[in-house]
Amino acid sequence: MLGPRQEAQAALCYEFSLEDHIPQDHLLRSIDRFVDPSSIRAHLADFYSHAGRPSVGPELLIRMLLVGYCFGIRSERRLCEEVHLNLAYRWFCRLDLNARIPDYSTFSKN
Image 1 (cartoon, rainbow, N blue to C red):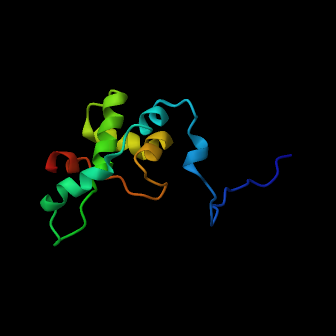
Image 2 (image 1 turned 30 degrees about the vertical axis):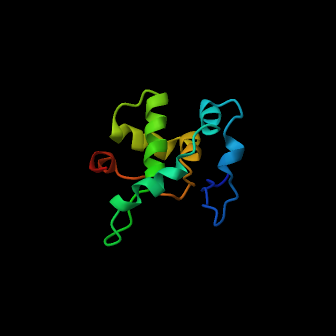
Image 3 (image 1 turned 120 degrees about the horizontal axis):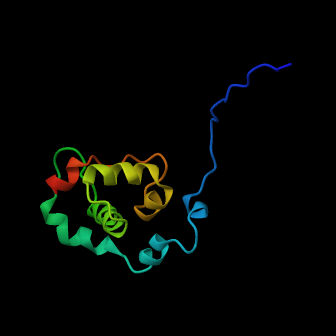
């Protein structure tokens, strides 16, 4: 006899660390040791407006482009989809699980 059907109930809180789910020998870990785009923000500060909605940080765009280059993702639309789905890409781009991925049109605008 079959018992009652169990419905999955969404948890209210999750304890999840991207750091724990990326293998130590992953290609992006070895690249991350040498990538430090934090100084780029200072160089590009004059080009960003203080009015309007907040812009996408240049560090994020550079990290996403590095992911696309390293893994042969040639389309910005596809790159945004892959960063949305892949935990290692999110980790490398410094995006947590709740962070929104920039729209693909952001690359051509920048």
